[in-house]
Image 1 (tube, protein in one colour):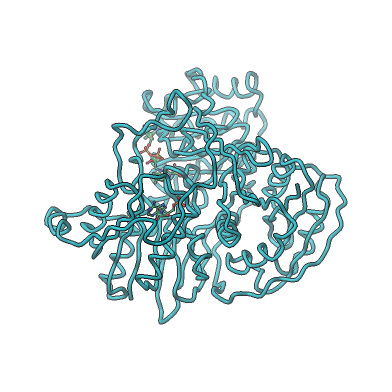
Image 2 (cartoon, rainbow over the protein chains, first blue to last red; image 1 turned 90 degrees about the vertical axis):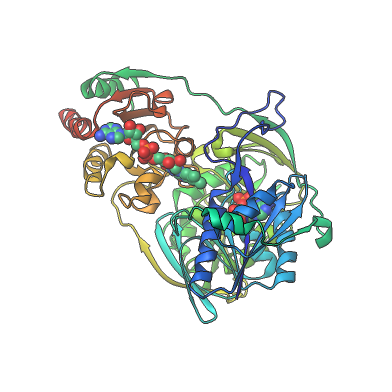
Length: 249
Length: 313
Ligand SMILES: Cc1cc2nc3c(=O)[nH]c(=O)nc-3n(C[C@H](O)[C@H](O)[C@H](O)COP(=O)(O)OP(=O)(O)OC[C@H]3O[C@@H](n4cnc5c(N)ncnc54)[C@H](O)[C@@H]3O)c2cc1C
Ligand SMILES: Nc1ncnc2c1ncn2[C@@H]1O[C@H](COP(=O)(O)O)[C@@H](O)[C@H]1O
């Protein structure tokens, strides 16, 4: 069984991005980039499926600029077998990403596609669900635990009220939540080995997908700033402020 | 302009998130209908019919809809989408699960986590954990939106919409509900509570959360947590507040032993009044707190409970 893992190159989670003065976007020059944390979790889960003998091959795919190759190398160093770079300098929206992934699925024939639940740049939380729709597959979003039994996949999901377990028919699309695993750090020997693993290069046009955006970005602005408040020196003073100044208790 | 709101409900009751999505949908400027999809869900439909400004309630009932799994839900919503210009759901885990599937089936780019409806095709949403706000115009014929409940007032009562039964679409038969582990609590829901008190990694154990819960009960507050506290097993997953957890905007948010990472702030910085209790006076949470108390939480929180008791809480 083959597992496909789409991985996105994004701004590192520790960077606080700045909005460009002209309101056209955020300033990404000289900013540290990394694999989207939820994608790392997805790669880890796929590699564990392989280590458990459940999966036979883990293929990673990234849609993005040439530099997204580094993200693929990171995934290969974690234990994925090979990579596909779908090269484009355009900003590709989740719907178009899903369409490209659908074509990759047709070419690769995986039984499971494991994505992150959310990319921490666009915060869209859409791509996996969209891919499942386009493929007509079952979906297990916000996965907390996966158990494969025959041709079904039992998925425990993090939902608003707690946890929900569903049984999915394979093939399936899964999106990972934070607590399904803790991704490993690639060891130096594995980083060296990853350099020799193959990465195929494609373009969106190879898959016949139009990546023209559906959403026109009118403006990107700073969020409303909070003004710093005051320090209080005791719990009694705090309660007094909350009652008599803020009127919230 | 006609919008359909996909309701969040428990079959027997409507959730507050629906009333908020209704008010977001009303900002589109046209008629608003509500879809209740479930099993034995007429009680929820009756509540939806009473929301002010709702034109019609569509009620789809089938065993396959009982748990609102994504595959049958998306099939249903797509089957009803024809006359609507916009499909709107609250950005709950349900909405986030179902709506992108709907959007892709309709070949539409969804707009997630809308915080402001600026026009029938123009919306603002946060990106990068709320460090930037993006205003977009959708060129798609139908708009598919999930809306942040914390950003919209709930639609009031006083409506008397008609309830119309609609057939459930055929179940694609791809998924099956197995079980659910839902936290039972008498406290208000995190996303609709007027007061939220959250604990972080510094709580150091599940047992220690009891001191926070005591304060919560005095204040009628909901209890939240940072990711670190959830990851460590001190608090259940559904308490996580943040970029990738729940987004809250209560009247009062009390952060206890939470450093104030951007991912946490993303989930609570729109609260009206923010209190931080942290023993490190340099903690970033103090930069956004209206009232900061530099103190050891294990002293300050029990003391807070006593001070509240003095007020008769
Ligand atoms: C992809 C991704 C998604 C994330 N999503 C979220 C999210 O949704 N929500 C979220 O919260 N985080 C999220 N995070 C994690 C986030 O980056 C922080 O790691 C997390 O918020 C830290 O939690 P904390 O403040 O409880 O812990 P810490 O950062 O460890 O802070 C603990 C604080 O407690 C204080 N303290 C210690 N002892 C005491 C004491 N006795 N009394 C008083 N104060 C004390 C310390 O001074 C410190 O400030 C995410 C991270 C990533 C990478
Ligand atoms: N450009 C991309 N290349 C590869 N995978 C992507 C890309 N964009 C999104 N994904 C996948 O979809 C998930 C969710 O992204 P999003 O829907 O944008 O929040 C990510 O965690 C990735 O697994």
